[in-house]
Image (tube, rainbow, N blue to C red):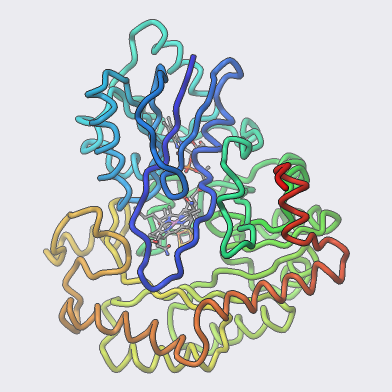
Length: 417
Ligand code: B12
Ligand code: SF4
């Protein structure tokens, strides 16, 4: 049986240089397929989608809300060509009713241990319109290493430098932050994978630089310490979402190769400033993720916030506009207050205002968003700041003997001259 997996293109934030990370949902989905399934993959960000060929089933994997409209258009075209289509992934879980008219089947939830039965239904001509496992989470021990070999990996580079490979050590999140749909999707319970399985997967990835896409590693102190201790011998360098702000855990993270973290900067408090200082004191870089447009922010606040961020000496800052995605607490609240301007999903990119802010007009928030990007990078461009992070990691790799020259890396890994 031939299955074609497609990752539709989404609109990128215009303030960031365009680079593409390898998608993680499709390669995890592929890993859960029975071995007899022949898999073809197209990531529209780096490959042209070819509608010819004779796949038996089209599987569309969507992660973002702003990806859905492209996913639906692709599905419509394939169905006109007589090819059946199934949808899955995070975006699909957030937009199931709207997806159903474009699909033969919609799969909601995590796929491990579940997809064999779906394929059996397909073979018998009994594919169900919906498979709803959204609140029924599989045992994380069933997660097998992602099938990264289906990616056209040389295409994931930024100006010749290979991008990080994505991996995850856990699912779910104990917290319920206002702009986030993760607890709605993955549940309010922390679900770690067995550490030995994570370490085996990480060790086998032929890339020294990784991104742990876990929601937040700061969920269970003992697990976090055990994970970092187990990673130390591998000498990998990695990026992650927040880690626990605890002296012992931070020391272990640094020793385990933590390169930089995405740290939400939610206010101008000394607590945040100290947290950033503790990370940087250990050589861990910090990319601040900053949401603009919350109800307490007015124009003056945002301008002072940008000054505060500059004083923090963050390595990078990513500004986004608060966006009421389905499944988030903030959407519920804005809906109750009738403050959502529209549901044109391809505009839900976090790069434009789609709601009525409390203390300014939508247009003013768009202007301040641009002001924040421009001011933060006025003295040093984002490209240069990114390059500095790479210079830093290369220095560390040279120090511990794990550095591979990019040209050599390409020859060794992909057999190209
Ligand atoms: C990795 C990631 C990214 C990467 C994506 C890299 C890439 N090439 O795709 C990067 C860093 C680029 C990214 C960017 C953004 N992201 Co993001 N990201 C994530 C993150 C952390 C992990 C997603 C993931 O890989 N999960 C692990 C995989 C294994 O799970 P999965 O995809 O669900 O796949 C499983 C199943 O769904 C199923 N499955 C998957 N595909 C299919 C297909 C079929 C047919 C079937 C049957 C099953 C199936 O199988 C898998 C195994 O069970 C999530 C948060 C989270 N933890 O989910 C946010 C998340 C998806 N991102 C989010 C957001 C908001 C963004 C941004 C828009 C804003 C921002 N800066 O954060 C930007 C994009 C800005 C822009 N317009 O340019 C939101 C989604 C909001 C939304 N509704 O659109 C999330 C949920 C985080 C949140 N805070 O709420 N992100
Ligand atoms: S923002 Fe991070 S910590 Fe908060 S609910 Fe989302 S995943 Fe969990």
